[in-house]
Image (tube, rainbow, N blue to C red):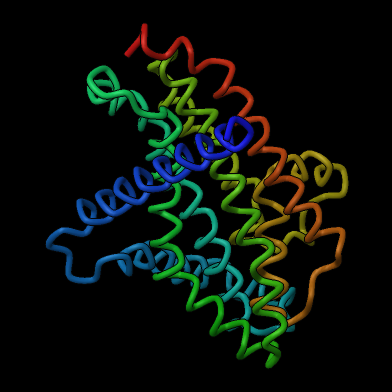
Length: 268
């Protein structure tokens, strides 16, 4: 009995955490789409509008990098925008999640990590409902191979890990630095402009590529674009790089969160 007790306690804690997470995710989605006509599909409106603008401005110039196909450029821009919009929305909402629930944390004993985690998962559920079916459909049309859909899971998981890591990091920092949203808005813009969204990565000068490689979204977007738009499988190094990038971001974010969370309650 004494040996099994720690395992039983750990299982009970994990079950409680999962139940709380499920409740918060459901609440987040209900509040977000209460009275909404299109629900999670509104998240596709911004990428669609931006794709039309990019195609009108850059379509003829960059189509040559996509087999002289304007349609492929449109799909490339659209897939890049889906990734960056998910990243921006999920991490920006998660940034304030701990402070926004400070009153609740002062009244009820809850695991602090539940709040940024629930925001990321809620946005990921929206992504799976709204954007993922389109990516799967495009992948099947361009590659005609269901195996490519399975490979598509790798960069999608990498994107989720990157967002979770940054969510833990920024939500922790916001407890101490309330000006962080202004800086983070600038950081998101830098990540957006340094990601191959409206331009092909082939036009990036060789001397800048090592710098852009530091962008955790770069391998994710490149992998998704190769699988869904070009109908080819990315190299193992690119897939491994995107997954490693996600794991590193999650590790850094979680370590910082664990190191600082004991100081949160004094500032909430």
